[in-house]
Amino acid sequence: METAAKKVLVVEDDEVVLILISHILARHSYVVHTTTDALQADELLSRQPYDAVLMDLKLPGGGVDLIRKIEQNNPDLLRKIIVVTGAMDEAAKLAHLPLHATIRKPFEVKSLVDTVHSCVHTT
Image 1: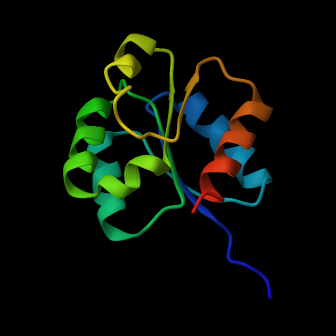
Image 2 (image 1 turned 90 degrees about the horizontal axis):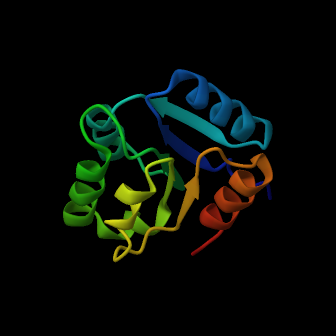
């Protein structure tokens, strides 16, 4: 029996990085949905489940605010969040949360793919 492709939401306001991550994940057979701002990400997350959420913190609508909203409304989703950011000072403010991982920009492709793989295959 074949398993369904895993769905990943990528939230990134830098269009080049968004396209790069989307192509990398699509090449590894993930179904990728994208948005460039936290408000639309919140809307997408309310409509359907995702196996992983890759997101920057410096986003229109506030990436840290989105994570805090998820913490309040859907805390189980926190363990599916992978923060991909150059703003490590902002990421440090979230260290107490059970996020899956934080990846520093610029990132290595293998590291990104391995982290997403471990996230979607965590029960």
